[in-house]
Each structure stands twice: as structure tokens, then as C-alpha cells.
Image (tube, rainbow, N blue to C red; front, side):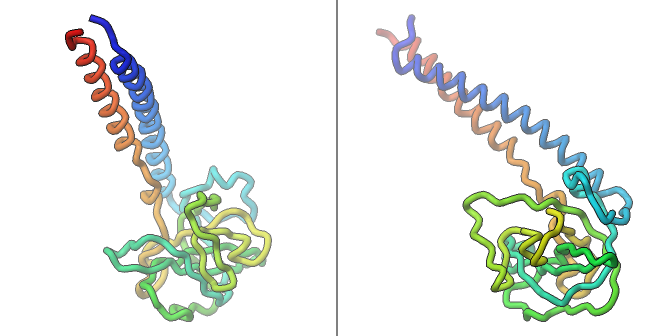
Length: 220
């Protein structure tokens, strides 16, 4: 018995896909540990957000308390439907803090075609939410349209119209009244697809290994 060209190729591909499966297994363990850490941060008691954050990544998904006033500007953040199949967007606002600095706040999800001036809030407020770090999107995400008050990803400087830290606050449920009481995205929104990838690569490896074995056992 000996490997023919097809069997040899299948064996090589089986090794490669098996290695990718092992890599995805390691990524799965990493992602589970990461999500557990993020959930622990999100479950901790809220703390006042400092005026300056030197390491935003160390604060991501921590519960924070912020105070200030909404500047009255309403913006939309396009997000996949969160309430069943109903289309909608998140309502973004700029919070002017007591020290004059500005933060982007995701007030919560609203249905499509909600009035642009819906849910106004006047005066000083205090809100609790989860700190998120803004990350540039991939090339599949459309460009933001600040002039139309429409965003496809949170770009804090573009939202506030000037320099600001690369962070934003996703309010917790119940912080606002009405439909937007759902709050912003949670840490559970971080995708973890590594198990599916792992199963895919190991399945392909098993199939290719079977092809290699069959090719070896086939009479010349």
C-alpha cells in the first residue's frame, strides 16, 4: 500500500486543516476567558468615570457613572435588529460633562423612523453604563455620514465634532425612559464563533484523512 498523488494531497490538507482546528481550539479558550473577564467587569459596582483615562482598553466593559447634560443633538447608530426582526437604530447623544469635556453616549435602541427629536432630556443628569472602546471597522462597514447625523460605527471625534478620547458609553437598561430604556450594546454582544470554526476545520480534516486512507487501501 502506498499513497497516490490524491491521497498525498488529501493527507497534507488534513494536517493543515487539523492544525487550524487546534488553533481555533486555543482561540476558543482565549475568547471564553476574555468574555468571562468582560462579564466580571460588567457585573462590578459602577465607579465614577475619571476625567482622563490613560489606558482605555483596561476600562472596556467596566460599569461607570457619568454626569453632565445632553447637548440636544440627536444622532443615529445603525445596528442589526435587536428587538425581534424589527429594524431600527441606536440613539446616540453627546454628553457634556461638568468639566466641559464631551462623551458619546448610546442611549438605547429605537425603532426605524422614530422622530429625530424624540426623547429629549433637559438639565443635569446622571447615568450608569458600560464603557466601550471605539475600534475602526472593517471594509464591509459603510462610511459614517456625520452631516446626516447617521453613523455605522462609533467614531467619537466625528460624533462630538472635535477631539475626544476613543471611548463611548453604552447605557444600562432602565437608564432612559420609553423604548430606549433597552440601553446600549452589552459585553454579550462580543462574538464568539470559534467553536463553529473549530468544528468546521476538524470536520474537513477528518474527511480529508478518510480520503487519504481510502486512497491508500485502494488496490493499484
